[in-house]
Length: 400
View (cartoon, rainbow, N blue to C red):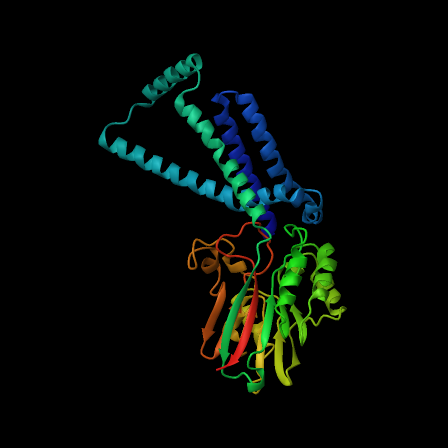
C-alpha cells in the first residue's frame, strides 16, 4: 500500500511539473522544439513509473533492457531532483506571498479591476513585441532541474564502481589470547541488480581475497530486488576464500521479491546462512560464537529479534545484524551491520541522510566493552554516493 501511495505521489509531482513547464515554455523562442524535448524527457520519467505500478515484476527486471544511465537518471530525478525542486518552489511561493503581504501593508493594494486592466495591457504588449526577458528567464529555469539530473547521472556513472578497503583495529577485553590478531573481512550490501556494473563483483571478490582474512562475514542485501540475480550472488560468494569460514545473513532487499524462496535457496547452498541462529566457529584453535538475525525493522521488532539469539556470556561472541540498531539490544562483544550505506548522501561526517535516519550509520561505535561496526556496503540501490564511499571492511581484533 505504501509503495502504491509513493508511486502515485511521484506521478502527480511529475504531471504537475510537466504542466507548469509546458506552460512556461509557451513564450520561449522556438517553443515547439523545447516542448517536444520536454515531452520526451517526461515521457521517460512517467513511463517508468507507470510500468512499475502496473507490472512491478517487470519493472524490477527492467534494467535488462533500459540502459543503466537512463535508469540512474530516473532514480535521481524522482528521489532527489524532483523533491528538491518542489521544496525550492514552495520556498519561493512563500517568500513571494510574504513580499506581497508586506507591500500591501505599506500601501493600498491595487483594485482587482486595475490589476486586470494592467495585465491585459501587458498581455497585449507582449503579444506584439515578443517574449519579455522575464519570460525568457522563466523558460530557462525550466531547463535547470533536467540539467541537474543529467549532471548527477554523469557523476554517478563515473563513480559507480569506486570501492575502498576501510580498516579498523579493535581492542576487545573478552577476546581469547590466542585470537589476538585475528582478522575479519566484512562484506555487505552488494545489491546485485540494477546498478551492478560489469566486473564490479569480480573486483569485490579480488579485493576481499587479497585481505586473507580468517573470517568473511556478509551482513545482508546480497541482491537488490529480483531473485533472478541470486545465482550471480551465490557464484560471487563461492569465489570468496576465507581461512576459517564464510557466513551470511539476510537483508531487507533480499526479501523483496520472495522471502521464502530466498531463504530456502540460501539454506540449500553450502554457504552457512544464519536466520535467527547461532553457531560455534573454530578459529586458530579457539571457539567464537557467531550469531545471525533475520531482517526486521522498528525498535520493538529489532529488540525481540536480537534477544531471540542471546550471546553466551562465557564465549567471545559476534552478532551479524543487518539493521545496526540491534546493537542496543545485544550483549555480543562485537556487532557487524550494514543497511545504511553510510548515509548514501552526506554533507560531511555528521550531516546527511545517515544521522537523519539512524542512530548508527557508518564506522565504529562503542558501549562499554562492546563494539559495533557499520559498513557502507559495496553496492548501491540508489546510484549516487556523496561522502559515503562504497567499502569492504577489514577488522583486526586485539585483546585489550
